[in-house]
Length: 228
Figure 1 (cartoon, one colour):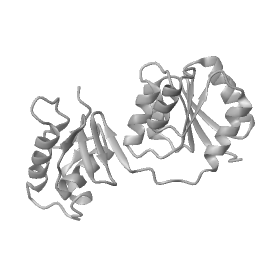
Figure 2 (cartoon, one colour; figure 1 turned 120 degrees about the vertical axis):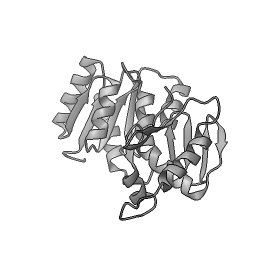
Figure 3 (spheres, helix red, strand yellow; figure 1 turned 135 degrees about the vertical axis):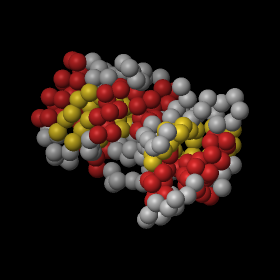
Figure 4 (cartoon, helix red, strand yellow; figure 1 turned 90 degrees about the vertical axis):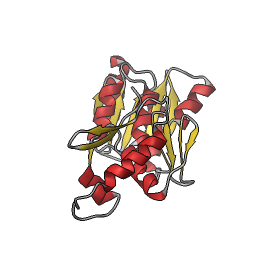
């Protein structure tokens, strides 16, 4: 058993959460708890967890949306979905969204503990094969990009630039960060190189009629956001 492994539990049902916390704490795990999806997403981004136990139906932000955003940000921690939805299609949706296991409610705590142990035994895996931010997808294996299923043809530097932005969604990225991490510059030359490439990338990602996703932040840099 992975004693002292740190688990983030995102569960809005207080009674269920208390039972899980009590049982897993007795088994030697460290447990942090969030009672809604938005808070769970924030905690997952901030902490160093070994496992995420995520309820499927959450207030403020659905469990599928939580895991979708985390996987798009290269969150590699295994995720165990809990859900009262026992339909096969729902389980498939949970697993395809990025879940590693799916346990339907009601469940026996010993089964939950066994699944937690099994997930923690898995070696760390390289999961970064596909990034997703809203309708925008980037396949790192086939080197293909698409928005709402529409192929987005990218040159190699544009692909790398978009990958960087998608690994940091909703975060302001400065020109210096892009020059260093995308162009491998170790200094900040006086150049409009980044702006030129961002402009080309934006015209490909934000086609006419699309809600914009790439924004300029005046005097600072750029940010990639899901369409408003």
